[in-house]
Length: 508
Image 1 (tube, rainbow, N blue to C red):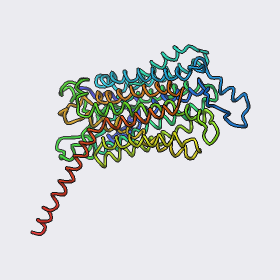
Image 2 (image 1 turned 30 degrees about the vertical axis):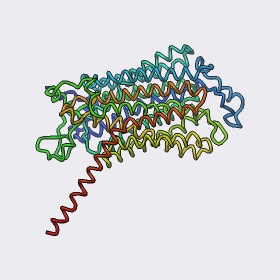
Image 3 (image 1 turned 90 degrees about the vertical axis):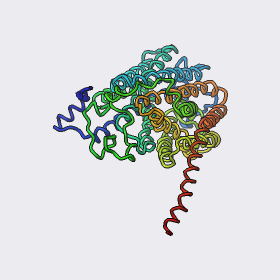
Image 4 (image 1 turned 180 degrees about the horizontal axis):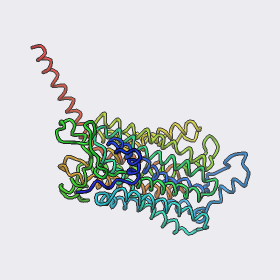
């Protein structure tokens, strides 16, 4: 039996100061806030390269004067860039960096899910954050060390991708240890705002520091996530057993004697001692066979292709597109792009709420993906007319692009990881999460990679690719949508057939 003496040092210090143990709900708050800010820092670091690439490769055939009152020295500085990214194939090289990072990230995701069931999640998460901080900073060190070797930046990005892959399975598993299923879509939709909050934070910090030299835009976020990793190690309790947690009657974990309607409040993952009494962890192939895993994984492939193309290329696209007749600076472009993530926060919460109300994950995700098509068409066609129109259309695009992405990677993954076909086996959540998000991350690598090549000839073609991907993403859920629709029809029919019986009984 695992001893309850593994409380993080920070928790021990707090309890010693208060001279009392923390309540179970206090631990839940710590977990929710700790994992939120942990993954916020992951995405803030992931966002840095999308802003910095404007400084590395500022040249474009479509770029004209930035501001009328700025002199040639400012414009020259904007165009100088950083070798080898400021050459004729600079856009392609930046795309290669993106795909290298995301490809390693995707492959690492599959292994991270299995590690989460076998190692201390707090150690895995801390190591991932420290490693991410180190290699993000080393990318920026190239600025002061005057490094111009493409392979230096390529290797740095690949190793950073490996460390970043530890984040998502770890935070999902930790939250799964502490929180039950009730209102999962809404709760996880709100919690998943860390993705957009991280993108916004990364964009703002990186854009502000860019004027002092692009190296600072990498080093400072790297230092911040490393510091956050230390905080996680000191404060994050990975499961109730590690802190000797006991439930009160009003807490969400399942205990003997609960009514049937409270079954939905059971934890997503049981304690490690309980796991040892259960069957062995679900294998990789077996997890793929869980009903719904493959369709949602393939849907997420194309959904993340769209989302990550915006993540990595939206600031670059904005800075190279005239809005109301003028081009924005690097900092302005980075700041404006954050509105896409503001829409993403709204979309994630809205998708979770709707899917809870309808009890229909596939219908919600597919509907959002189909709405992406007109949203992207309108943004690409009319976003340049004025700043106001650009902002409105960007917010709308963010809602529909990030809504299904957030829903699938959180609530859907948790649903499938505790699917009824598993017959109570609690050791599938991390593996299912890794499969779905790992498959999606391959799409996240493909999108920016293709954009690096296609955008050199035409941004119109890029948007066609994105709209086509959104269509395919929705089509992969067709069978599940039909099943949910049939279920709703049968439910309505059963409700309708019961009303006459009730009316007859009342008359009698």
